[in-house]
Length: 444
Image 1 (cartoon, one colour):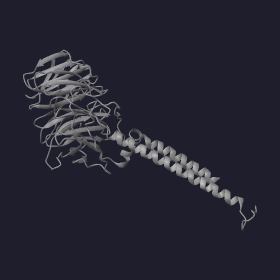
Image 2 (tube, one colour):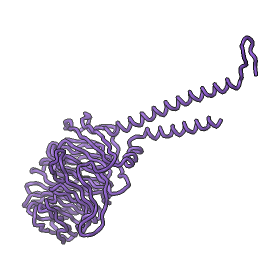
Image 3 (cartoon, rainbow, N blue to C red):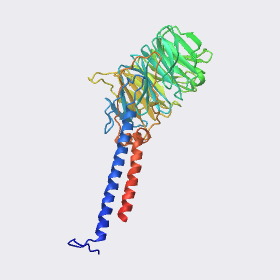
């Protein structure tokens, strides 16, 4: 103890040191709290900026994000199970995107990482698997069909009387004048061959540079086409009810009479399995020799069909507003619908696409919505938005696109953390450092 003259009492050295230590701890604690708060703000800002990224040079495509606590807010009802026995599967609606006009066609990269959609107002729009708009390009005419190569680097669209190819960044690579309105369009898995069917009844086959390889008259409007691996096989469906398979030279290998206008065809890359949807609601499954029959019939037109990689699963969408997943024998394992507008009016399914393993499914509807479903607990891979915006050569500003994401909180958090909000990781690390530092000081 130390006595100081002219001071009424003793001053203890230990008490003075304790007060200094406490004050120092408080200052350090305040600094750490400030650091953590700044990192959290940075993380949330990064998530907001990426989630609201725009797709054109004019930043005209606005994406509004709204998260839900549960699935099922997409305007339809999901049910599992099938008629006539067989297995069943459950799906989660991961997100819904609302576009400015009727969705006329959709396709998906085989791994589910990106989705391309075409609309009646002429826009071709690319989404990643979290529903973020990567770009939207005006094509100059109503989009009737879209297709995407396996690597996602080539996208084909039928728009007005033209066949168009775009690259992964949304740049228009080439266009071909079909001299008649294009009804169907497709691209081979490797991106080397493209095909288009026209209202005048012609089938056009091009290479990946836009050079026309074949122009084959069918005598009836070619409503739909599909291209196999390397373009070795082309399937086409016509208004007079025929399904035809052609080889690389344009020779018809076989013709199947479906008995009703063929609205959609899909085939495996090797051409061993071919699926088709018809105007009278039939879903037809054929083998590589053109043999087969309807495996299921809807109460309305089967507007769109899509096979998975090996033909063991098929997605189908109807004019009555329902989407189905079924096996190769036509047994339904899942359905979604009915599609409606915000005013409650019934709407049709206009496009459907499956990932190669049938783990992910995308639906387009003339209620202006695109729906993305997962049949697995694994989140799909995704493609992040480029920092440099797309600048289409002939583009006008594309209209607004709004997106809602009705998914479980766990799934949303898991999706955002590694991919869209890296600042949260930094904040978590600094938080751990802060706790460790505080614990050590407390121990002293």
